[in-house]
Length: 61
Image (tube, rainbow, N blue to C red):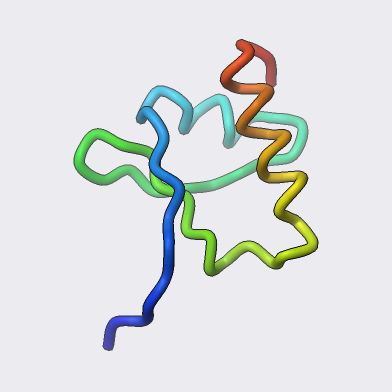
């Protein structure tokens, strides 16, 4: 069965930094990309997820 969902597609290089960040974020690697399944993130955690991605993009953790 396939469930409809949406994923945030990031460079694969983000995976380790996201996993080891202040707020650990675990995605999956597929096709050379790090995919974060937004269906598994409660709406109240959207800001925390966005902040984690911004920190990795800025070279922080």
